Image (cartoon, rainbow, N blue to C red; front, side):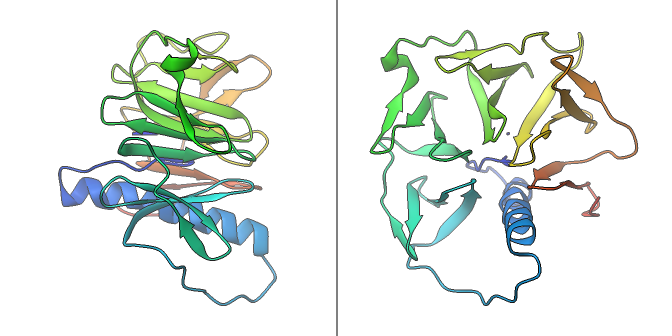
Length: 229
């Protein structure tokens, strides 16, 4: 999102924005390690990487982005790369080898296992410019500069089957490895859950959040006062 976790990482114009963005990576790492390794005692191992600005964890891969917007694949304790053809301001890692990036011109790139390919070069002309992207078990989702939500249909980004509520503008989407977990935040901080039965985003009550992270068994959020929900 702006997932990101669920989540993406971006260039920041202020320390406050940078802190907010880095919380996405922190929440993603917490969700991954707590859900995947609960009950086991593990020690932290330092990776052979440059200075990293953010990290993204999917179901099978881990990727990182440095402060120059270069991206790396983390394999056997080493950062391999940079692997992006152009600086990426956003990166999202989802199911299996699903890895995505957005460059400074908001072009969308998809990892094919060996390199990143621009969707436009594959004939996909998405109707709106995506400013946020998030990937997970339930697909790849994006948000435009006007707050509209799009989902990747295997070829291009298209609106969700039943669209979104009229008058609601979204700031980001969050998709993890939780099977029923596609979440969005609108510009007021209200969380929305994508209903797999109605194919619609349902509003939730009880918290106003700034970030969401989705793990294998649950959903976590942080509000503007840095409280965890």
